[in-house]
Image (cartoon, one colour):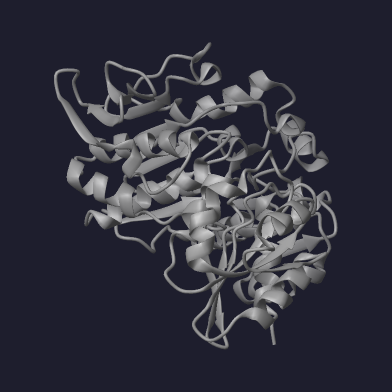
Length: 445
């Protein structure tokens, strides 16, 4: 078969190598220029994969029997339109890889919370002695797992609307929709089309499968098409089947409404915030469906330490640990970060505030922090609040802040980047902010 892969990013590359291993003729078409793909081109040539960079030409479709498109390639892109006009089948990397996977699959989608919930479910399973691996949009394409994991390993897949939009047979054992709010309309055109892409996660499920829904999210529930699978819910109020909040307790009522147990107290969750309470309930329900004990679920939800940009260890340099907590965009998240270490902390803080009350952090700062580096729009507010209590330094840019923290830190200290503020004064988002911080730290010399 002649297979064209559109896009040479992580998922496109993985699909190309899998298709080649399966004995197909593979052609990769990438619209970006070849400059940043030098190493990949060497791999393509070594494996006999043909390619083009700098544009999608007619070569992409002239001999293709199948198109595998990368996430985010717009449906209005000329090469996609051309393939449709020629009636060439177009699928996502997710759909292609699924044909060669026998593992149990838990698939998670939603506008917010996908990465945390995917990592959390994976952690609960592994912490409980059940092998699981995170994949999909979280970083590892499913194509990279084919032939590389045991069949009894549970694949926990974070899936975007882009990936789901081009599926045909993909059928997860458990599908989870965390929430749906308007997003990616530049790709889908309308909110309704975006909803429909999300709902595709359960489109092929049967009575053997489970669909887990956020009962409190109107856009998830409203107008949802019929599913062949069983349904369970997570909610902040009582629900017949699923996981819900009753007082301070997380209660599970699954697999039947007569079977009710208390898993834990919400105050015991390691991740703060209402959104993480929802993520934790979804994770708990998925674990119960795989018959993981409540005790193991509780222990895991109490000990889970988060994902990228959330208390992420970056590097030890000159005896100092550098921690990226860019995801801490509010006071509560930073409180958790400052409470997580019993060594002296050099705290890098600031960004765009949201009526921040720094007095909530005073006890922790007095106990754990030896110096504060203040950045962004909130720099003056943080400086004025703490400058009479400990050493505070203003920095105009994040790079200057890291350099000042380096100068203040001694062997055994921690440089903790936990901003307590939004990122939009200086960065596109907290992910961008965290990536920049890691790059700066890794370039320290």
